Every structure is written in structure tokens, then in C-alpha cells.
Length: 400
Ligand SMILES: Cc1cc2nc3c(=O)[nH]c(=O)nc-3n(C[C@H](O)[C@H](O)[C@H](O)COP(=O)(O)OP(=O)(O)OC[C@H]3O[C@@H](n4cnc5c(N)ncnc54)[C@H](O)[C@@H]3O)c2cc1C
Image 1 (cartoon, helix red, strand yellow):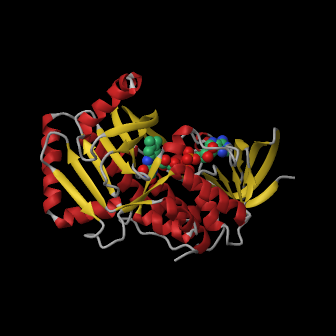
Image 2: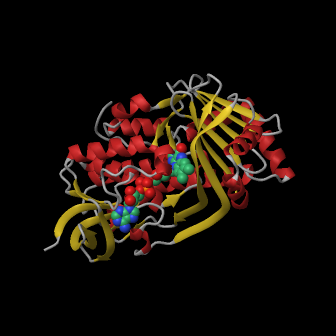
């Protein structure tokens, strides 16, 4: 007979893992199906990838008892500096002017994944790992899943199936979801850099005619760069010897951090926008990258996914009735609608406006930056969005 759960989460990445933790102190029976072996080292990309956590995400991670183990490796962002190469327009945000300790933090994706994994094994959530979801069927009162676990096919059933299985989600592909997709025809090159300057708490967003460059303070004298450009150009730059690559990056980024040198290899990611028009279906809900994959330039993907996980936990624990019912899932969809569409729209517009060398766009963004620097109301709105505070944050259990 199939083992029966209240909630089965497919995908124990950062978002799925956080959902399981948020539910772990309740009476709900929760299981995770994760295809990556738990103790496996993250691939090179995850090890290098610096995640900019908004202030709002820090509050949620604190409520999940994860923040204390991340704090030591978290680099606070005290200032954000936004500029446009070749123009005067700039704007600066500071933690002080927003009356917060930091506008956000930078933590390696690898550290977040390790903290989630360690917490999950302490919380006693049932883990099917490594195991892969093969197929599922929805019946009136449950979903029945077929997975491959330890080389054997096995079945599980649950009242609610959560797809937290990333951008190529099997849960989404096999369900009734309307996926909207567009390719930006761009790639992001990411790399770890050593910087000459002693600046350690400023994040930079530099817009250039080819595409934006985000520089995040990492640890010690390291910064992490996410450099977006047309795909053909990225292929060229990836082939260049390190010295030539750094010379071009330095020329585009400028001297804000003094001399730059490359540490380790360069990685590249194709950039797409994909999101589902409906993130719920009968007995199924999608969260995180399974529901929306964003351009990384604004550093919003995990922050948005974490708010999905926290809100879903809040709805499941506070709404009476069958947790997989249409009524309960509709409460979740309604509560996430505004935040998701704002962040998707904000990121998409930012890319289109700031990745163009069209003269009209260039004038518009330059005057926009100048205006924002002068108008506290605009600046505060931008700060609230960046800090992940524009959306209502759910209240979870845990550290305070
Ligand atoms: C270059 C770059 C920079 C970024 N920077 C930032 C940033 O600064 N701030 C930010 O907030 N976000 C950032 N992001 C986005 C962020 O990395 C993602 O939004 C986040 O990792 C999504 O987490 P997830 O758990 O939803 O998906 P994933 O991390 O993709 O996890 C999905 C999990 O599901 C598992 N899985 C998949 N299919 C199956 C299956 N069939 N059966 C079982 N398990 C399965 C996978 O093994 C994986 O563990 C960045 C992304 C990129 C590419």
C-alpha cells in the first residue's frame, strides 16, 4: 500500500526545503522527494553563486531558525549604488536612510542549501532522497505519486502535492498549468572576483549598453559578479583568456572597486522569463522556480520563492478545511497574486529598459535614476521593493 502524507513536496532545494521546515512543527505529515543526493556537494555554479537576500528574507529565515547558522557567512549590504555607464544618472540607497541594519545580505547558495539540509534532518521530515518523481495522478481526495527511490518504483499518496522542483518542474509539466515563456536572448556570466578596494558593504548595479553588471560583496576581499549580455557576446567573452576578460569587465564596470582579478572559473546561464498563469490546480500547487523563473539581475528569484513557501505554510496552518481543497488553494493563490505579478513585471521592465542602447531608453533610464535620487518617495518605494518589504510577510514560528 502507498505511504500516505498530508503534504508531499517534490524538490528539496532552497524553496521546497524552507516550506518543509515551516510545516515541520505542525501535526501535518510531510515528505520531500529530492533527486540530488543529500550529502552531495553542490555543483561549481551553486558553490560560487552569491544570493542577495532581502531584509524581508532575513526575517523569514530567522523565523525558520536558519538565520543564526547563516549569520556568520552573511555579508551585510549597507549601500546599493545604481549607475548607468556613460551617463550622470545614479542613485544610492543606504541602510541608514531606511532605518534598518542592512538593506540585505549576501550568502553563498551553497551555505543556504547546507543550512536547510541540516535543519531538515533534525526536524524529522521524511526524506525520499535520492528519489525522482516519475508521474502523478490526481483523484478526488488525493494525489498519487510514482517515484523511483533506491532504484525501485514506489507509490506515495497525499492530500496536497507541492511542486518545488525548479525551472524544469516535472510537477508542472505533468499537470494542468499554463506556462508563459520568453527568452531574453541573453546570458549571464558569473564569476568570483578579488577586488583591490577596501569597500566591503556596497552592492553595485551598473547598467551598460550591452546589459547590466551586478557586483555583490561576498566574503573577505571577494565580490561576485553577474554580468548580463547578448548570448553571442557571452560566448565570445567566455572564450577569452582571463586577462582579456577582466580588462573588458573593468572597462565596463569602471573603478568603483579598484582593480579586479578573477578567482576560479566563469559560469554562464541562459536567461529566460518563465511563469505560470495559474500556480494552483486540483490538489497541486507550484512554488519557487517551478512557478516563476526570473532574470537574476534584480536578485529576486529566491526571495520571491521564499515568500511563496512562507505564505503557503501560513495558509495551510491557518485555513480550516482540507488542505488540498480548491478553497484552501484559492486562498494561497489570492495572497500571492500581487507580489508575484509585481516582482515579475518589475524585473522584466528593468531588463528591457536597462539592456537597451536605444537612445530614447537611455535618456529615460538616465533621467529616471536622476529623478529617483532626488525624490525620497520614489527612492523609498524602490528600497521597499529591493528589501522585499513591499509584500506582506507571513508570520511563522521560530527565532525572533
Ligand atoms: C546567476 C544567478 C544568480 C542568482 N542570484 C540570485 C540572488 O541574488 N537573489 C535571489 O533571490 N535569487 C537569485 N537567483 C535565483 C535563485 O537561485 C533561484 O530562484 C532559486 O535557487 C530557486 O530555488 P528553488 O528551490 O525554487 O529551485 P531549485 O534550486 O532549482 O531546486 C529544485 C530542486 O528540485 C529537485 N528536483 C527537480 N526535479 C525533480 C524531480 N523530478 N524529482 C525530485 N526532485 C527534483 C532538484 O534536484 C532541486 O534540488 C539567481 C539565479 C541565478 C541563475
